[in-house]
Amino acid sequence: MSSIVAIVGRPNVGKSTLYNRLIGKRQAIVDDFSGVTRDRMYGACDWNGKKFTVVDTGGFVRNSDDIFEAAIRNQVEIAIEEAEVLVFMVDVTTGITDLDEQMARMLRRTDKPVLLAVNKVDNHARLLEANEFWSLGFEETHFLSSITGSGSGELLDAVTDKISDEEPEELNIPKFAVIGQPNVGKSSFVNALLGEERNVVTNIAGTTRDSIHSHYNKYDREFLLIDTAGIRKKNKVHENLEFYSVMRAIRALEESDVCYLMIDATLGVEAQDMSIFRLAVKRNKGVVVLVNKWDLVKDKETNSARDFEKKIKKKLAPFNDVPVLFISVLERQRILKAIDAGLKVYESRRSNIKTSVLNDTLLPLIEHYPPPAARGRYIKIKYITQIKTYYPAFAFFCNHPEHIKPAYRNFLENQIRKHFDFTGCPIGIFFRDK
Image (tube, rainbow, N blue to C red; front, side, top):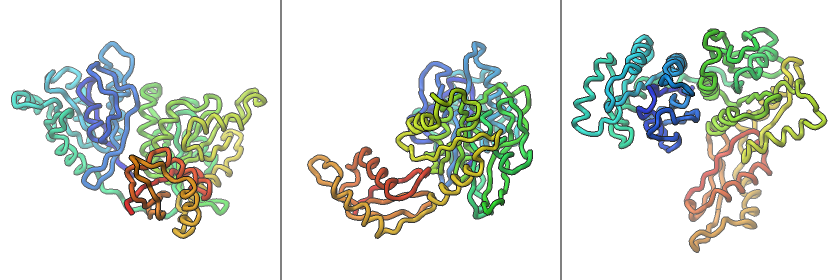
C-alpha cells in the first residue's frame, strides 16, 4: 500500500512549487497570489526505492477573507489523520506568523512524523534568518529552496526514512476498491454485497470514515473488498469533503487491483469523478464504472441507459473500453453482475498473450499501417512482446523508438484492444531499441 505524504502550510509559502519538484512535473498552478492552487493536487513520487503519493493541500482552501484560518485548520486535521508523513512548510522571507504558530501547535500534538521545511532559503543571509524557525519546536527542520531545488534531496531522504516498508501480500485473491464521491452509495453497495450492515449508512455525505477490508466468499466468487467505512464526526461533515474523498480514494486505490468507480445517475459524471478515474488509470488499476440510483432517473424514454453510457464513455476517452453497469443498490438490481464485471477485469489484467500470437496478429497490421517517417527516417517495428508486470504492458522493438508519435501509440493500443480482451484495463506501451 502506498503511503501518503501531505504538504501543509499557510497560503503562498511555496507548497505547490515543492510539490512540482517532488513529483518531477509542473502540474500545480504556481503564482504569487495566495490561494491560487485550485485543483486537487496529488501525484506519485519514487525516491530511494520507495513509492509514495504526495498531496499538495493548498488546493483545498476556498473563499474566505480571514486568510482561510478555519478552512486551513480543518485541512490540517484531515491531513494529520490521513497522511503517514507531514511536511510543514514555512517561508523565511516573512518569518514566523500567527498562522504558522497555530498550525505548529496542531502538528506538535500528533504522533505522526512532522518535517519542518523552511522555504526560500537561497542565500547565506536567509540561512541565518531561518534559524528562528527552530523555536517552533520541531526536531527535524530542513532549510531549502523549492524553486532552485537546493535541500529538496535531503528532505526526500528524511521523508523516505519515515515511510514504512510495504508489507507482504497476505491473500492471493482479487482486491476490489469501491471509490467515488461522498454519498453516491458506496457503503450501501458494500452492505448489499455482504448482506450485513457492515457500514453505517446515512444520507449525510461523508459518513464513511476508515478503510476496512471485507472478505467476500459466496456463490463461487472470492475477493477482498476495500471500503472506507465508519462514522465521521458531525461537525466535520460539510467541511473539506472533496479533499477528504480524494485522500480516501488514494488510500483505497493503492491497495486494489480493480476499482469500482461509483457515480450518481441523477448527477452524471462530475469533475471529481474524472479526477478519481484519472488517478486509477495513472496507477494502472482496472476500472468498472457503476452508475447507481438508476431507479431514480426520471423520463427514461429520453434518458436511455445507452445514451447515458455513450456520454460517460465520451468523457472517459481515449480509455473508453471500460465496463459501465447501471445498478440500484437500494433495489439490489444487478449487484452480482457488478461482481462478475470486476472479476472479468481482474482476469483480463492478469492475462498473458504469447509472443508468437502477438507478432502474428500485430505485425501484418503494422506493415499495412507503418509508423510515419520522422526527419526522413523510416521507422520499422520488428518484434513485439508482453512485459512481465502487474498490468498489461507491451514492448515494441524498433529502429527509432524516440520518433514514434503519441497518435501511433494510440493506434497500437486500439489494435491490441480490438484483438485481445483487455476490457477495463489500462495498457502500457513502450518502444525499445531493437
